[in-house]
Length: 309
Image 1 (tube, one colour):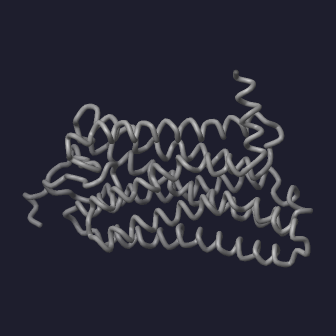
Image 2: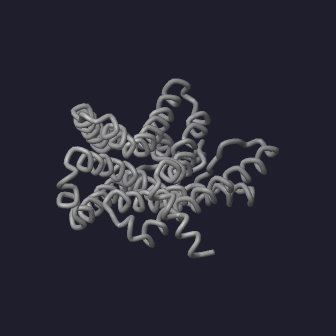
Image 3: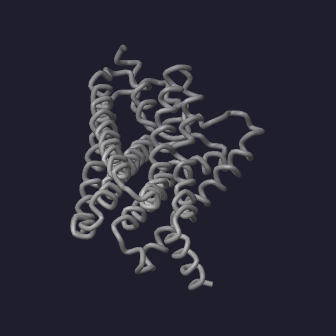
């Protein structure tokens, strides 16, 4: 690419999910509703866990952290999308785009790390129940969360710095409703080999490592459950994992679906539509999955709502 074709970037254009004017009010109402449900649902989980002494346990400590991260995760993308629809402006500044990408990667990484830690927590609770509180003491739980933040901050910082070194051409339209890393790299005019290498390396290291940790934990859990003699004990042990399994499956399958759909169809628009599942729908459903199947959470929510009534 000739040097004169490069431009100093000041802003990008987010094309969103649809350019049809008639669909904009529908999209606004739909995403506003989902965002409010997500924030309210996850906020209730955080408040219920923090206000109820019965839930001051490692499992619920990690759950409240996950709920807080899900609020932040959704808040990095949806409010900007709603503002763009309402103002009929698709522009986002260069600095705003990099900032949005940084925080999106940060909270995705935290989701991945926390889901892995929660799998280990279930493994200890089921396979070592007598030593559960000794192993999962508050200091270790705090260290798990601190390490999760450290990994996520370093990853998002690395990816953002790698994008900052890129040069962009005149075409600055992002076929997405937020500044997604892969879309940003594809827009660059300069060499992106190192960027792609870092993206794939981190995906394998963080995503693959996390998935491997979850699978190993559940392999051990299944082995422990099979060794139990009591059918009631087996059911009780398995029931404590169902909510986490559903959330993990939802997160990884929707995330995988996004990248498979983009690889098969080669359509950025279909990829943007599919990404709604793990960026908006999954954080919205998490509170329902945990509260509907968990008597402790339901009880804590009733007590909390009774206190505030």
